[in-house]
Length: 473
Image 1 (cartoon, rainbow, N blue to C red):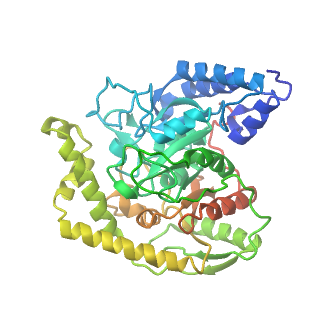
Image 2: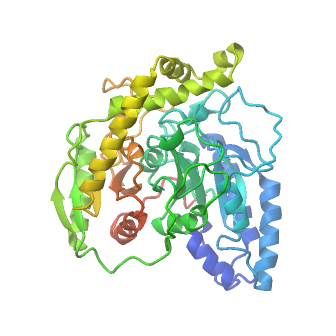
Image 3: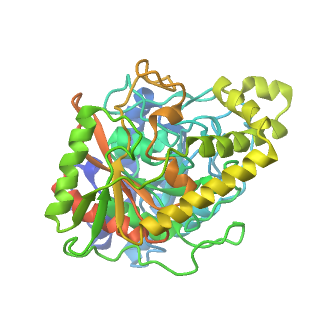
């Protein structure tokens, strides 16, 4: 391929732009992948974002992609794009260790989960597996097997979790497309802490197999440096797979349709705290400023709480019950190897009665119906993604603030896992410490396009966040 128009800094290139450059033979998938791998080699010692790097496999896939592009026959919409998979997701030829010393180090690694298969068939160059807390159980990323993952904005701090490795990689463009999972905020939390975009799509769009221990709380979705790239990735991920036991939306979605010219006619509810959360003043101020942009884009914005009480007890009941399934799979020696926090909630889950579980399911149904009615009146609900700034890596909660668990500092995310709605975090600026702040966009079920289109309209008006070392990498 010729390189007369090669961008001077591949570290800031989007997947959408890379595909355009492949098309006009101004960039080679091999060159892009090699550049990505070189930057992973540079940053991995400080970030620990990868559980596994598949350098030779990736270069082989990139060479095959280059041949297809030269012949004018790309195999799919992601042909040649460096892409990562979370360590919780099965990927043929790469270890899936689940962040756990209880997993088998010898494999075999013979099966692709649906998302891995769809990405591979679309031509994505799979460069490795990103880190997660053990079994994805908490809102930060460290585990007994791989250690602590760190935030590229300040390596003393956490990138959040559980898709923390994917978020750290996305922030430095160590791969352009990153698969995350989200059962209580695990895409949106780390995107907020790292200044990246991620969306938890409506449950049912993206198939899951094997099923998460958190069952229908768990959603799979994209994490990228732009809303357009996440839409591109969803156009591949949101395909049915017969192995998934949960029926999704039978209608197809045009994920790549351009956004409208403005938000005229949209009704948006803005809740600063859901009526019960405590938000740091500098974060509240940044979010409030961004809400003003929605008005400038033509939306009618009403300051309004959605009208539900904190569903924490409902979430905890389902979360603990899910975690308890681990104890049925692991012997006593393996249980002693678990993250102590995970073991504690799994044991609490053993005490959840069938009556308590079914009551939590009924509460979940009521909350879902309430939000369905709410969205008859409002196209979007907007909140902060998180109420706090990134804190010290290696901790589950900040040293100050009186938090007891990760759920205490994530009040905006887990309610919408209960309701299974689409919800995204878009970077909207920096806090008083110079660290990223996320704006949370929540839409009606199966109307993910509203979330994505609002994000795409907002992006050009927001500061472009770049962590230290991005362009120098």
